[in-house]
Image 1 (tube, rainbow, N blue to C red):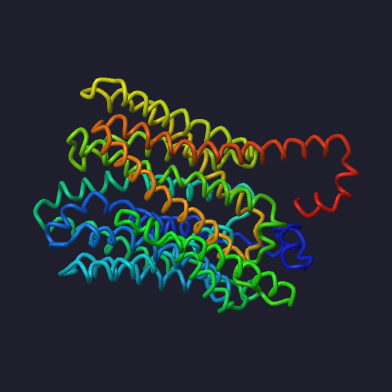
Image 2 (tube, rainbow, N blue to C red):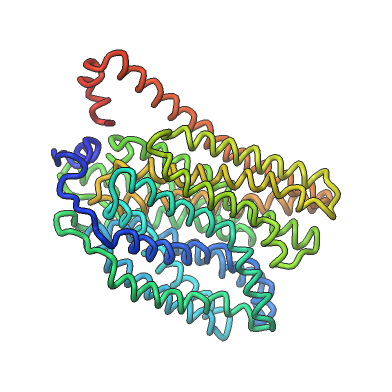
Length: 505
């Protein structure tokens, strides 16, 4: 365990790899968790292309059918930190397998739902199962891998995160094209069942149990405070299309107040020597965690919302089918997949510089895509914009994977689940804000100008603002690392005796 880890609980735990023995099944176990994680994240976006079909088939109102997407995202986010801490306190393998089994059953229930009410209920339960499963992925990587291998494993994990969000519309469109008919949307959920059952069987055989020395206790008041705070912040966002932002604005200050009380309660538990739900020293003594969480949240504000904007532009503006619309954004997914795996191998060498370069690539790529779609003849615009979109995808691959690695690499294994859950909660909040704000801005401009191109450029420009803020934060962190590196070279003894440096390294 690192010195930063030791600082986080006040104990001297020795070198980072003390007691670590490589699991011979670790790489096969990784692929089990990645497949499960891919399904859970894919279900955030894959359903969006089927909403018109679901609405017609189940005779649902627009507000009801919107809950098929937003309800899943809401329950997903609510579970993350609690689920991560539960995995730390009990057994990650057990929580993962139970959550995966629940996800499979809920997927089958979604596919078989006879009406919109039961579909929404099943989606809420499915999102809850996904939220319990997600933090175990990053925690198991920290438990199974060390050193350069951990960077490679997080590279695959980052690739999974990026690809699952980008290819959701493509896979959803392909399923609808293959499963023709009014009931074809049900296969979007049924496809999870055989894959999930296989993952459960392999997981029972390959996944390791949490060591008893890494286990802890649960903080019930903290669970309640954090859950209510996140719910208050997210509920107006998921209700944005039905006027939630104007009707429920008061929940934002209420949520902020609840999170402030939660933070105070966590500090109080630490002062009493009791294990909190989310140790606040993660943000103050674990190097890179606070910055990485901020970078991820800001990035996902723009990253998650752009896919809905592209779908609206291609399907409503250009008349594309769901499948063709998904194919139009595939270059981003290809670039992200290829870059994320490479980035996992380079993060130990280049550190935060990879994130800086990646964010710059995303901004240039998506900005170029917006301009090309704005001024190129519509008949060839998607083809002309493909190289710029691919560049944006390559940049995205260098953002997600290195940021996850650098945010979590110094976190103690015993806190890995809670830390991963908190990181993903920030990303889900950012994603909820982006998916509410960017399509809303798109419709606002479209309603005033009836110009789909102008609406697209405006919405993508807003997404780039969030990414630019993330770039500023990453650049500041990179410069800080460079200054610390120069100090170490010039005055190694002085830096070694610096308590701040000792706490960070």
